[in-house]
Structures are given as structure tokens and as C-alpha cells.
Length: 145
Image 1 (spheres, one colour):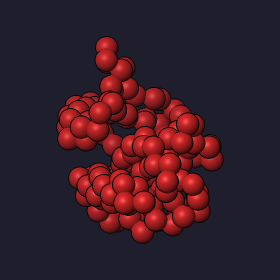
Image 2 (spheres, rainbow, N blue to C red):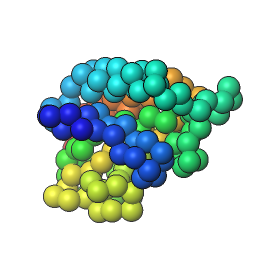
Image 3 (tube, helix red, strand yellow):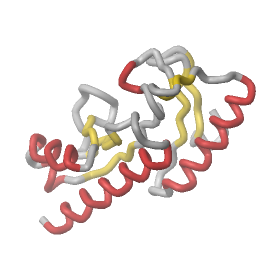
Image 4 (tube, helix red, strand yellow):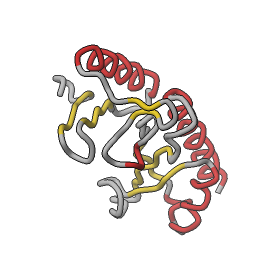
């Protein structure tokens, strides 16, 4: 990881490499640029397996395609009062709702990890933008409730 712990790489977890760029405050552009620069730098040294139709090949089939899972931790207490409703609304925007410690965990303090569902059939940028646009809609709905 870097000194600020805004960039780290996990080895041999769910996939051979999990490359993570993160920071507090919601500056998705900075997080995305850091990730792209790092991935490009790593790929110069270690080529990633890529298939013309399937995209990047990963050990976990749900990560095929761009492999990008862009997520934010967000508190939406009004929407979350009914978890099924939150998941239904998130689904409209191709978003997945998880607890803050990952898949199959509960929210902590009403904070959820919300990420893009789609990884195939779009670019990395489109995956992040789809998540961003969906989060903006969830925030708007939360404020209107």
C-alpha cells in the first residue's frame, strides 16, 4: 500500500490480484485516475489475461469483463428502513447493496457499501459512471423522503 493507504494490492484473495484505490470524501475522479495509472503500470510488468468476448479473465466469474467494482460507503437511513426497498431501488440503477464488510454482511451504523453490478458489456469508465449516476439518484431520493 502507499503511505496514505489510498492504494493497495491484495494478492491471492478472491482473484490473483485485487487492486484497490480508495479515499474519503467522494472524489471519484481522483480515485479512478489513481487506479487507472496503477493498473497501467502493473500491466507493463505483468500482462493481464484478456479474451475478446469475455474481457479480462478472472478466477471469480462475477468479475469477468472490466473487473471493475466501484463502490461507495453511504448512509441512507430513510431508504434503508426497508432493506428490500433499498435493494429494489438500487437494482433499477444496476447497483448492488452490501454491508460495509462485503458480500453477505450487514450494514454497520446504517452505512451500506453500494457498487455497480455490471462488469461486462461496458468500459471501465462507464462502469464507474453508472455507479456514480445511480448513487446520485439514491441520494436525491433519500433527500426527498
